[in-house]
Length: 265
Image 1 (cartoon, one colour):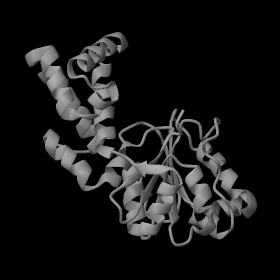
Image 2 (cartoon, helix red, strand yellow; image 1 turned 120 degrees about the horizontal axis):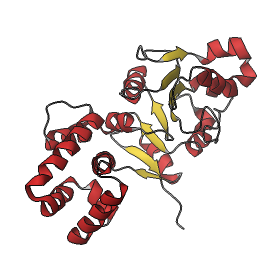
Image 3 (cartoon, helix red, strand yellow; image 1 turned 135 degrees about the horizontal axis):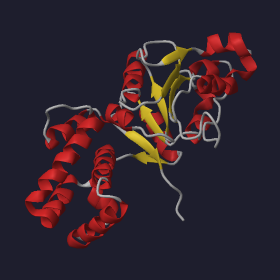
């Protein structure tokens, strides 16, 4: 796995700061209740007070807490309570303090990341064991949102998820077109605005086929959260193309999530 991790980095990925990502998302949702104009003014004031850039401030709980106290005094309790609620929702934690919730994120970064995946994001999951894959898939679908949920894989998926396999789809559409037709199948299930789709593409790799390009700006891929899993020992020559199609990579036996680094302007 160490060799694969090096290859991932060579292909333009770097470790993601998962805790910062989750705290930042919770902070943005907290401030959003003030309205766009007020939240922008508040952020400008707090960045001036702290000397931090907005991204740094939102990702650093301690600095954000101090800034809120400086601005609101005891009124900061209301904002911090809401931030705690947003963070609890993101980490699926109940009755835990801030530090305990952050400890949960540090303890199992990949699972925390899966739970935080947003629409429009695409993750590549490289697994050795079905148990690890199924745990990550369960985290991916652990969302309170009203959305369409679909999985193309054999194995355990939550009861709320419509599931099939590539082999079953091949019987309906034909082997050669199954990768593209999988999107049609997922779209046929769509009941809401958003789609969360998990696939195990090992079957495609073994048949010498590549997965569909879900970066396309059309249904069902537009705005969908997509998890694509591969057995790392059976992905073979499809690894470079799979990396090209995804924003993030989760690798079994690693507590690191890799994010694609944006090219320098």
